[in-house]
Amino acid sequence: MALPPLVEPSALLSAQEIERYARHVLIPDVGMEGQRRLKNARVLVVGAGGLGSPALMYLAAAGVGTIGVVDDDVVELSNLQRQVVHGAGDVGRLKSESAAQRLASVNPLVRVVRHDVRIDSTNVLQIIAGYDLVLDGTDNFPTRYLLNDACVLLGKPDVWGSIYRFDGQTSIWWARHGPCYRCVFPEPPPPGLVPSCAEGGVLGVLCAAIGSIQAAEAVKLILGIGDPLVGRLMVHDALSQSWDVLSVGKNPDCAVCGDSPTVTELADYQDLFAVTPPLGTGLPGGSVSRSAGAAVTQISALELAGLLSSDGGSQGVLLVDVRGSEERAIASIPGAQAIHLDEFRSGAALLRIPSDQPVVIFCRAGVRSEEASRILTQAGHPDARSLQGGVLAWVRDVDPAQPSY
Ligand SMILES: [Zn+2]
Image (cartoon, protein in one colour):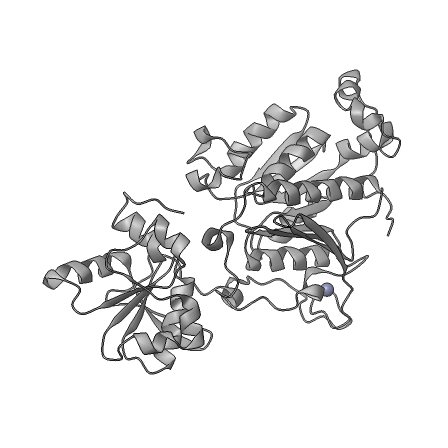
């Protein structure tokens, strides 16, 4: 599907610009006019992480005139395996600041606009409105759905990518010309069912493959050349080195872009999709978090540490780690018994956990342990608690000598 150029050409290029972009200007499909369209283009990259890193650097090198960077996180040591826009000296800095500095060194002719905020329903429309297209480099479902819905409401293309371990996917969601994200993925998966890269890992170089495809699609849209990935879903497996393209169509019943949309204004989807309560909200003795219809009792890392050290032992508490062996090898809590979340889902865990013993369950950040606690509670166990914030909270508050991940 050929589409007209998204952006009008800028004024004439300077001699310095023509020299810098000569290898573009030489391509007949780009030419001087195409390079002027790039100069006039405004691209918003949401997330200066694995996908955002290559996308940002190539968009800057390509001469996209205005590049917005949305990120409110700081660079962590465990980011550097794939987030190549940041360097070792950037650990602890805001990602948007680190990325902006790097882009300025790649191409000082490009204007970089920092948005040091977490994108939410109150700011997303205002931020996106100033750009021609959105490049989604986020790693979570609530933001992904929010960006999609905002792009549908504003009529903007959403150049999307997703990665996990060795698998990548990318497409352009653009309701004006094809399906949106909700047309193809109407419902988010239940919390905890799809592990994040933080839980399951990701091959660092996969980010280069998917993020640079997103950048290429953004450039094609700006120039109005080729066959953009509108209505097509590219699926990549780095292990078999396969690239498949599936046709995806518009859903007339889509909640946001269908014939009778039910999503006509934006809401924050954290409440709908995620269940992890924010750290630090636990009350002494355990707070209660309600999600997916069942109550789960929480325990903080400090409370757990007190429980394990008092009375010269564990007070008979069974400590259960629902993570996989790779995660357990990075950081753990002494004395924990490994019972994988899958065993809770299959019911096998119920045979391994005495019904008269108090249980504290933990995972990386508290989502999977909440699901396991809920399963146990619903099976009738009288005292199952989930470690709030998971082993990350334990490392932060109790045992900072262990690595985070
Ligand atoms: Zn749709």
